[in-house]
Amino acid sequence: MPSTTDRALSTPLKILLYGLLGLVSLFVVIAAVRVAFGLFFGLIGLILGLLSLAVTIGFIVAIGYAVYWVVSEVFGQDEVTASATDASRAQAAHTTGEANETDPVDRLSERYANGEISEAELERRLEQALDGPSVDDSGTAEFERDRELN
Image (cartoon, rainbow, N blue to C red; front, top):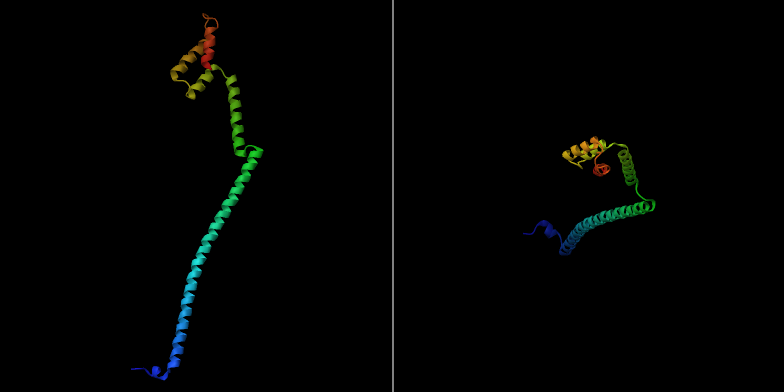
């Protein structure tokens, strides 16, 4: 049974009303698709922007390292390596000067502490060093003792 509204509306008016309803539905669907595409392309744009930022930072770091490398090659060592090298040279000079000034007992004790000789070897060489050169072989015993101490 047709309602009073259906009876009151004429057929051309119904066609116009349904056409308008279809047009509004079409605009809603188009707006929803547009929002979905906007979000999708916005996300793609964000990802590409972050990728571009990462590439730019990497490029800047690479240029910085290249400049550092060129400067270190032109001007020599960097400060950390130079100070470590200077410290090791000073230690080597100090150790060399010390070795020339110390007596054989100190040198033997140092070599034992560094693990270069065993305890038995230390005792044997200390006995030889403290006994002094023997008189029987003139210079041969003294030469062997000096060779063993060094």
